[in-house]
Image (tube, rainbow over all chains, first blue to last red; front, side, top):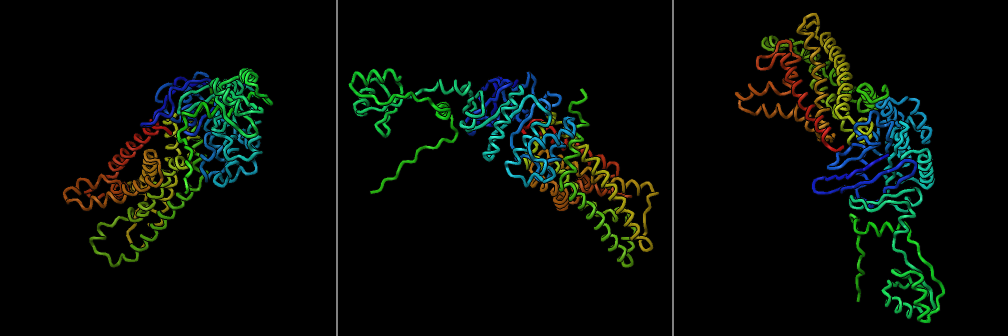
Length: 307
Length: 261
């Protein structure tokens, strides 16, 4: 199990991670979601002992990474697929890693085979596509057959087939009882590949739960189609509903339940043609949760006026 | 447990990394070509001009250090091998993979040091002995030659290889501190070439007291059979240079431990 305990990291004036605490449990795929620059990679680097925490700590089964006797046998990580010496062959890269943790050379062949890169094992890594580099990174993460696996933005640069392969791969790792921790800034990806999601923004913990939990907590809205949208809008706004008109006589209403809307329409003599509660997508939830914590938020460009 | 990360296992890992990149091979090739090639050119030039040389020149002539003159150039090749052994990890980002596999950074630094010292020492000694013997063969019959049976001569040839080894470690240590290949090569080159130039422009009285501490002067002292009185003796020069290297290596390793990767 992976535990982050009041973790704080300052880089000069910036606070990259701010009093972050959470636990990642074995047997499920846990997504680590946040906008770019929210501290996901920093957290991962601290877990691996690459960066030193300013305060707090990250432990693997209660042990600091730096104190693990043979780290590759306990934790496998893929942080940056391109972070391999470009002049070295894939096989030599893996052999050097294996040697450091006393992993048998035969295991190198196994993971090359598994990742589907045996045929290019003697090619220099510099010539690899991003997809091939990702596969090499996965092979490296699996070298020590570890119980805890970390992946930082693993689907970046993968083609659709590769993305499907990696999703199934995460699933199978979790089914084997391993701890699988995957970061992403793509909520749509996390919605399909993760069981549990931890959301952070600006280095702070925002929320944690299953995909269903997260979408359930979000403010829902109700779609109403009626014969008199104008009149209904007036009525619902009087009840403090947030009404937004869309095409086809439809209104999207926030702040009111479908029951309240139905009664109000009946009282006003408006015929309701459709009344559908809208379930927020994970994407909407994510946008809502992290709205205040986007590092480089864009604003809407005002249209220029011409005479 | 026998499967833990040990100094032995990390050193084996670093050895695989060291021999599996072309920079190492090229560095050694340059070491061979510069030392032996320039050694041949210099000794041939001396032989062909020997008849015109003055009695004073003949009196101060050193058959050992002249035949080993190519090592001054080879020192840049071995320095770059040492620099790239660490800076290439920062350039590619593979230092993170390395440190995730070997979180004990002192052990990592030590493993790289062991690989570097053993490989550079073996190659340098071979190169220095070959160059020396070749130089004496070129001199023979015209110019007075030196023999390895003379203990001072043997010491000079061996210390020439030690000098190259120490400079490779110096390059590695600078690499630990600066992390960036280009900056390291500039600093390394400055230490060997620019510092002597600066000293050259200092007042004479300062020169005599400072110049002997400068790394290439220490190398000259280590390789000379009869050091000029301004320089240190060979063994003292070795100790002074070793202290420099150990200090820089200590600073570099401390920085490796303290900084984020």
